[in-house]
Image (cartoon, rainbow over all chains, first blue to last red; front, side):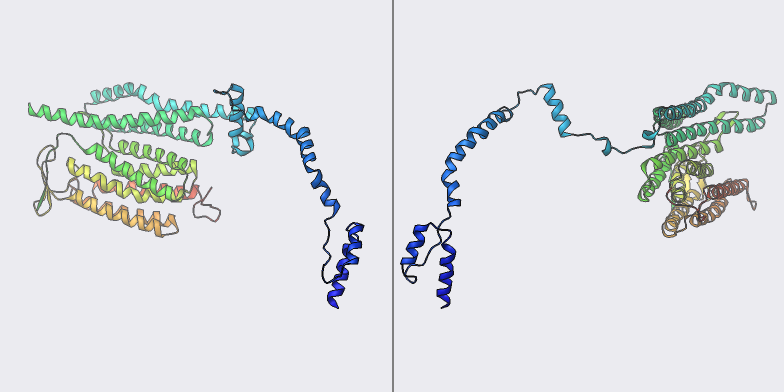
Length: 229
Length: 241
């Protein structure tokens, strides 16, 4: 009974979908020998039937013009690339966005503030330069003063305080020049003058150390030669 | 057993002293970088401290005599100059100043110990006349003779001080206490080692020992000023500025 009900249900559900001729045949045939099969719906079959036409129409309307447009882009670029392509390609491959770059304190300053800072850094550097080199220029005068003192007193003990004063002045000005340069480097990082000055000082210091080592070594060598004679 | 030092054709004194200072600075730079101090801060601090060390060392030994200008490298002057250099750079840069000072103070004994090799080979800073075991014999030159190995004892003592300072600055959380402790040990050791040198005249305190005490006091005053001006150890002090 349950099977019959199922079959009847199937039959009833199949009837509205199938054509009228088929529904009449199913009523005539016995239910047990030939079960009713659901018929393909005409709505689904209809586009399948029309597909070749549709494809042809689609190709004519859209695909062929698209391929025509696409064709120049698929062709390789002429070698070497024209300048305009190179610029586009470089710009595309390596984009430089302002948002990706780190902002420094100087980027947020107005041009007036920047020029003020540059002036201050330059003042620091010029004073540093003066302290670095002026003692060297006046060393001749100072040594002549020491020589005069020793000649008049004929005693080198009187020259000791003077020599100590000279060494403190020279050494102090040299250290002060480095201090001012470091202040300029730390406070005004954007100053190129301070940067150049730093490397100049490092170069002079390295050359000075090398010269002292070589002079001491050479003097010892010469003295030994003199002793031999 | 005796240690014989031949007279050398070229004096190795200056290269060894400058080399020892460079080695000491290299050790300091390594320690500062491991502490997370930026490259720029290390560069500027080391440049300024190196210049101060070298110049103060020369100022201490600069003399005008009848034979001309005499100059050398003074260990005490170098120590004062180094601490002054760290103090000045701390005022300018302010990047973990207590770690910087601790690193330099702990490296100073290493520099001194290595520089004593130059003294040993050149014959300067030698001990009193001595003919027993481990006597240092200089065969020629200005310092010819047999002497007590004061330079070798200096080297050993200051290498031990360097190890002691390294342990203190690494283990102690309060770097300022470690710095004061290192100075409190180093100054008396340097004072006592003066008794072994030929310059000591046999009195209770020689002029050289007074110089040591003055230099030590100057170092302590600079460290005290550094601590107060930079407010290190105070509640408002921040390690990273």
